[in-house]
Image (cartoon, rainbow, N blue to C red):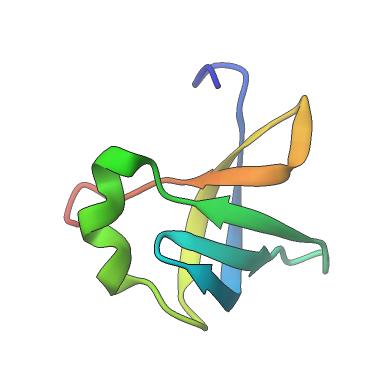
Length: 73
């Protein structure tokens, strides 16, 4: 997913689906699957149910988002 094509949205983790994969609810009530890139999996421990996350969502597949890890992670 190109960074220029992605939409950036903020949501809250509502369910853990595995290591580095969560169900995220957006402010408008929509839910999607958010995942970390493999290179960022070491940061998975800082996220849990109720954690706010920033997602990059492709316009081609709005059901999947990539969790953007902050620089401090």
